[in-house]
Amino acid sequence: MAVKLIRQPNKIALIGAPWSAGARESGFEKAPAALRGAGLAEKLASAGYSVEDLGDSGVRMFASDDEHPRARNLPEVLAGLNDLRPRVELAVKSGVLPLVLGGECGQAIAIVAGARRYFKHLNVIWMDAHADLNTPAITPSGCVCGMVVAHMTGHGAAELVRFWGEPPLVREPGVMLFGVQRLDPGEQEFLTRSPMPRLFAPDVRGMGGRQAALQALERLHGDARQFILHLDVDVLAAESFGAAAALGSPEGLSLEEARAALRVFLSHKNLLAMDVAQYHPDKDPDGGGARLVVDLLVDALQARLEASAAAEQPKPAAPESSPSEPVEEAAPTQDTPSLPTGS
Image (cartoon, rainbow, N blue to C red):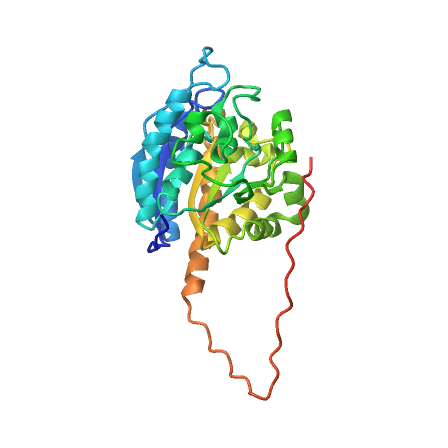
């Protein structure tokens, strides 16, 4: 059901999703504690936010699960979704911004489902090196975290497709792939017949992070519909992380490109929730990668506060026009043309 929620733009609810069940290996379940330990809540408070930490959903661990090679650890993933979803519902209902710390990408299904409790139609911005469009039928790995977008849009295992209500959680035209760098063969085939909008990493680099983000919102009709932002840290270039280069991707976005895009996305009034995924503390022994991620988030969220404060400022009254003066009509706008998909 669609409801009118009273937004509290200066409040954030932190929620941890310590999961690695849907990933290729263990270790991701340590991410929420590591990001908190890097000072996320304290830095957000210094930036001007009121931060409430709602704790963690249950730990969901990776296992090899050779008995189910097409969808490994699916019962654990489902248990995590059922645990996380009501926590997100509560935060959305209270009007604060839920910031979910993961873990692996599967958490995004619970976030969208929790928000769908109050909004019938939602969009998703998928800021990730991977499209996550595999299904059990085409997956090269069996990892559920590589199938998240496919399941949100109604393709794949019945347990996930129907996790919450009638599928899909999000229509394909409502998911923007942003910064994607690699596609598996089955994902490439999926996109040849899908209306899903996308701006691949070369597109973002060519336009610049800010302009690419503005175009992404325009193509999703961001001013008319609430959206969820998913940030996978591997969308960043490996070199951004220094000694923890394994956290990023060789063809990823530069730190400045990602920062510019995040400031646009997080400043938008229709952002409903956000999650951070795929930070692996074991690949970041000195914690420098965690500090980089935290600083990136705080910078963009500070821009959100600034945008909110500017929107509250009274606007000067427009001068009255003389009745004898002709009123100039705005020229009609055209739909933004589809961009090339890149490589």
